[in-house]
Length: 287
Ligand code: GUN
Image 1: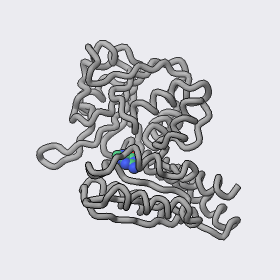
Image 2 (image 1 turned 180 degrees about the vertical axis):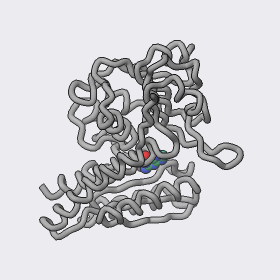
Image 3 (image 1 turned 30 degrees about the vertical axis):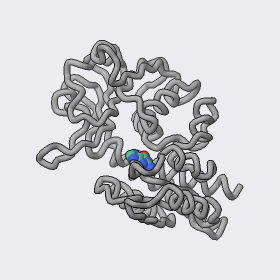
């Protein structure tokens, strides 16, 4: 029987654990952990993501603020807002939803988030610490992928993980995370991308395949070894308006030993790890 890795259910369990810790923190410090979300422009997908993240904060007893800026916002205006949020003692974590409009240099904005409030884990300090093997804030999607595997008792140690996609948000940090020494790591990791010569030759060797390229139903049944574990990070809109992953779920589930669905797989886990990081940020700032 193929195991469906239910991210929605696990997210509920983990959010209940986080809510209890938020209540402890609030009682001890007289201050609720809080997330400041910054949304520039009117990208509909980004609006949905930010709304869901704020809703989750509210449900867990955290504060949240939305800074909604017009698409014409300049880089200096955004940097000015970040400088305020960086020093605001109410704000534990800062999330600047990506992508940003083209007049703004994303890396300059990511660099401007205070390292102790970098709950997305995209900043140079967070990434440097992860690379060094002493992580502080893990990027939320890679962290969620690791947790869904660990909590479902899927072995990572010694396994060959093939990641399709080398983004700074998913592929690259996930490779670092899963190859790390220690629990939840110790994998042998291969990263494939758009210039890889024969992706299927690599994915068919994998014990665990992770696909994060944003291409509907890219991973087909013939591209995995029977019994492999498949993690689908894609959230794509099909022409008829439905949500679809990067994996041809109906066909691949017949050969995989375990697989994450879309929706209800990695998406809810990503939000959960953001909440985890926001609480950790509050704890770090008050320790
Ligand atoms: N855009 C797509 N995914 C993410 C994410 O995890 N965080 C932020 N800030 N923007 C994103």
